[in-house]
Amino acid sequence: MVRRVSGAAKAQGGAARAGRARAVVIGAGFGGLSMAIRLQSLGFDTTVVEALDQAGGRAYVRRVDGYTFDMGPTVITVPHFIEELFALQRDAPALDAPDFPAATLADDARVRAGLTSGPATAPYCTIRPILPFYRIYFDDGTWFDYDGDPESTRRQIAAISPDDLAGYERFHRDAEAIFRRGFLELGYTCFEDVPSMLAVAADLFALDSVRTLFSFTSRYFQSDKLRQVFSFETLLVGGNPLRVPAIYAMIHFVEKVWGIHYVMGGTGQLVAGFVQKFKDLGGTLLLKAPVAEILVTDGAGQTPRTRLGRRHARGVRLADGRLLAAELVVSNADYATTYGKLIAPEHRFWNSDLRIQALRYSMSLVVIYFGFTDDPTRPLDLRHHNIILGPRYEGLLTEIFEKLSLADDFSQYLHIPTLTDPSMAPPGHHAAYTLIPVPHNGSGLDWSVIGEAFVDKVLRFLDARGYIPGLMDRITTRSFITPDYFEGHLQSWLGNAFGVEPVLTQSAFFRPHNRSEDIAGLYLVGASAQPGAGTPSVMMSAKMTARLVAEDYAAQIAAQTTDPRPQ
Ligand SMILES: Cc1cc2nc3c(=O)[nH]c(=O)nc-3n(C[C@H](O)[C@H](O)[C@H](O)COP(=O)(O)OP(=O)(O)OC[C@H]3O[C@@H](n4cnc5c(N)ncnc54)[C@H](O)[C@@H]3O)c2cc1C
Image (tube, rainbow, N blue to C red; front, side, top):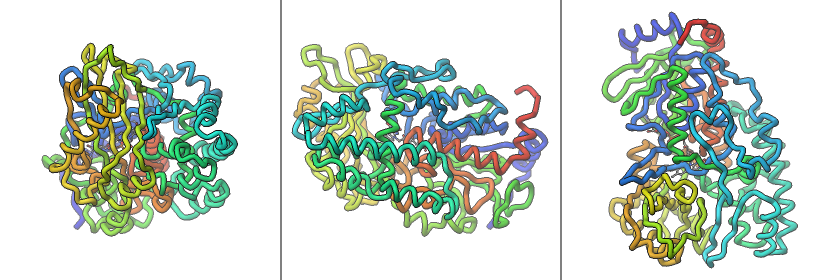
């Protein structure tokens, strides 16, 4: 059945056609907000509809008893992507500007000098570099401070495994080659057809970047510890180091070149900045407005670019029955939710229920948010970002990603923002979260039964191992989320935390396309789309999708962006 747009919605759309075209963005995660800012700069009248009562998506902020807990992303990278968004103006899309301005590549010493955010970012938020990037604890209590500085890296490698020093030099050289080709040159490529994929396949094979990351890393390092240090980072974007292609070795360089950063006041301040920027450009944000359906017509009417004579997205129906008409719709929701729940099966061929079920989805997480009293007699010997690895690496990853079972051991990422920014907790207290990768809900685990005991076990571990001595007596608040939060609250298929899993067979052309193959005027942005998960990637995803929109709606945009009317 083709849903007909109601008279009221048609009238809305008609009014828009007389002036500016309308766009609806479903979801106010970083991907959706970045896209919404870009659509405003393209001259569209954009409405973002978000199911929750706050923008941010995975970057939602939980405030409890004077504590501020960023619920999701905490490691901010590539600050010039942020600067680029804050610099955009209404009717001035600037999509031809270089993706990687030479100045941002000039000298990685700028990271250490604290030159992180630019003039356009400053009115919205303050971004600071964090060093070391991560302290990585091994199960025997030793650690590695990873800061992207080759000299300090060499010193620490020499202490752990001197025989691996030569391997590090080779790793550094080869990872840089992957970064240059895979990120700087191809990072913004929309892989929409087989030729686009074949055009780069030879290069990717030549760089040896299609083998798995762990196997790639293992070629350079004999030490198990170093193999972990140089492969764990993909877990922060939902990738299993044992399965992601080695092209992800680029993360090492992305961090080295642009550093790791923190937004003062927490990542929520960046979300607030994006919302403000979007509003400054004239956009509209509707909260508590879950979308129940993407409206699709049979292709009649204004179709800017119709391939295959397809159907066309015409707006959305909210759960409360309201209809919002639009010339184009961008979904920032999970891939499986977008196609599987919001679009009737008869409108889908490439994105069928079969494909949705056949894809692999990233792992999920348990995240524990907790506050505790500072104790000057027991100062914390931790860093802002701490990776606490368990006794097993490959075995644990296999349990999480392949066997979908909950192991007795665990690894975790412990975040203590109050070490940088005391404003995140009441005076004399620390705010923290610890994140533990667990299988997605395909596991059948009942988190309502096992959740509390699991959380207890993790917190007791932090106390007993001396990471936070006396934690169980010092703790003042605690709450947690499980895969059920991702599935129920964030509408993620199987409770995945990072979208479609980044494996070779789901990368580039094989990853969901940013321009729908089934429905004209429908686009995807965010973690499930190309290039993938992580805050810089979803900002890239927005720019890639904006370029597609610019191509498809060129005539309208030309009319809109020369429109001299005031906002
Ligand atoms: C705990 C955690 C820690 C992380 N840490 C980092 C990190 O340190 N650094 C980093 O770079 N990345 C990190 N990531 C990954 C990163 O946060 C995500 O990849 C990124 O934020 C995803 O953004 P998004 O816009 O694609 O989606 P989301 O943030 O998930 O936003 C999607 C939005 O769509 C809304 N939505 C869904 N369905 C509907 C509907 N039907 N109607 C209306 N709205 C709907 C949702 O409510 C949500 O707000 C982390 C992720 C998690 C979960």
